[in-house]
Length: 129
Image (cartoon, rainbow, N blue to C red; front, side, top):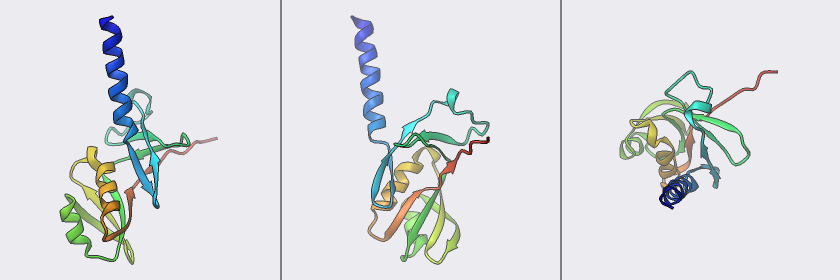
């Protein structure tokens, strides 16, 4: 009985944690599921991998793409990030100080009224034929 309670608790907490994991693609929330490190096939330990709702494998490091007309320096400081560089007229690459918070920070930036769009700078895996 005790074994079943422990298993239930682990499954429930894991499900609750992963149910809230998402990023914004435009204004749509895309659910992400963490890929365990032993199945990630990654040689780069600084990359965390997720599967999106379509089963596409996405890697995340510590960078966020942000579109804004506002002062990016102020926004970056408020969200514990630094501006790496300007990519286009209103498009910036930011780096967060804590890679484990990159998705949460991107979501918070997206919800900031001064920001038109924000999402992690995903690394996509390429399937070779």
